[in-house]
Length: 327
Image (tube, rainbow, N blue to C red; front, side, top):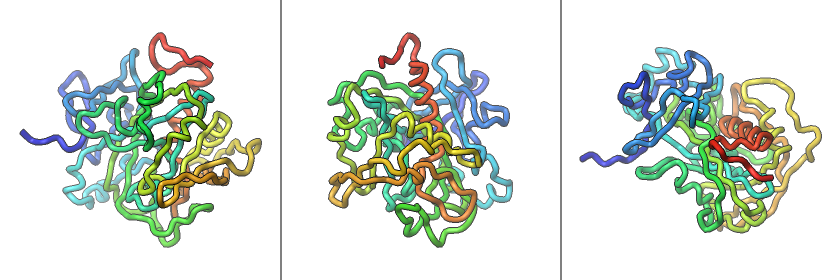
């Protein structure tokens, strides 16, 4: 029997058997009739991440950005992608929105040495491995002491987003202004790079985890790997609102005038220790550039997940029937 090495996205339509999503297939487009979002249901079946048309109960929002590279891929561009890449399928990732008792969520800055999404701010997460589930994924350890050693109140999938990454790798992305010289071309979604054909295609499930501990208590448990994480920051509702207002691909006003010019963050040293630093607010409010060098910023999918998180704070609706939050 063939060993399952990766969890891949499968699409179930019209009650037919699930079929593996193709690398060049827009997953959102399978359910949205051309729109950039759709309600879907998800399940894990024999190491397959199955998406089907959303029903009234238990559905989540599936979303792609308007500038999704797969959505705009021409026939000639698709044909130029190597066959081994075309046959990869669509991978599955999990990102954890860890909400503290004082209503902050944790974001981490990915290391500059990572091939995909370097120097980009995202929730802790990673690929889904065989026999894992969305809610027991190893990233729920937040690169620290496992959260199951801390009492967890709720763990629920809040949304699913699509991200696509090209294969080129940035060199010398500067901290502070986040500029990466020498890289030119068209931006591909949430990559930390610009230019190049899409070489990776993911669907990311954002999972909300509620803890009864404050963010400072949780911060004391963090043990990030410097090979993967270079910094972390806790985002409260006002900061989250400002981040969400900096919509990628748009030029609308960013709501950050009433916030301080810098926020407290923790830098990760080469040895894995954490040191307090100040992060310019402008970094977290940066938008994905249309062309040219990419910038240090919050990923597009993370902004969407933060938007839903803020709505859950306002309505106390965590997406679970009969379950409410306690302020």
